[in-house]
Length: 457
Image (cartoon, rainbow, N blue to C red; front, side, top):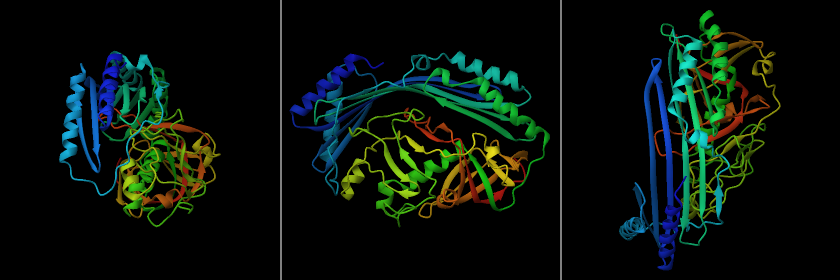
């Protein structure tokens, strides 16, 4: 938990700067993180860190300067030194071509609804014991790898515009395991997420993989020749597709710069199938809820696409200032994207029992976007993919590549699951900034283009 004295020091320097007429923003980020990696059936990495960062930004007219400090904060002089460095950078900076919108904390907010002390202080032996249990119960003849990231994150935001304060503390975790056959090379995986220690169930992982192992052990792989297929996309694949569609199509900056696949559209026009509704909803508990952005704006439910119709674009402060728009509360790396559920059966196999041959692709790997302006994405099936015929699993499928457009895949949706899942999209290589989406457990889309298939897994 953030020391009360640190917050007191931050407020003191903030008030001093305000009294001097300085326009400044103070962003304190504290994380306590632990990461364990598994490779070749044993622990390959077990590391922890406890880091404090302070980002200071000063605005002088059209000039801005920033300074980041990493380390312990013990006194006000430390903060004053960071402030002075940011002021000096602002003085030396080239002026922007627009007037920056001042950061201002709209109202005092303190959030802790997704904080779990047990997860924040989880012992590494719990993680290693869980992996050991998985390996022993599923069989040491397979090669197991995976990772388990967990920790707490605190954010404190102050500006010289007023005396309000924003504070957030939360915990998060992302668990994954990969089971690989040493000779056949097929791979199975399971991922779980949550903000409580109890959100991870090893029994669930074992049950999921136990059902898939005999399918892969007892059947040859199916090679999907290039063509169009009906595809069940699992929750992970849905999250990858929606996340990339939002990033490349619903960002105000991309739209203004004519780089997005929505460039030729305006709010009110149809861009996706009428079954598709997407919102940014920081009140959804399946996401990591963040009720404010880092410019001080309170975040609420923000519709992006409704029944296939384009509703809004997301504008950060800089983009809004440059193009004369209003900021939308998106100076943030932790959005809460939600794709609405539908009315499909809980069981995806039940949903496709009358559809003949169907490819079931739970996750997409190595996602990329070869043509951003046309919204064309590509990704490989790799994990857990199977061939389904009339609602029955027939065999695993060889690694198959989907290369298609967002508008085709999300414009030809046949079924959407009635239940949702949380899918973690956090980056474990930068500062801790947890991100999760809430998406249907599957969607069924027709006419999906498979452009390539390997001769093996």
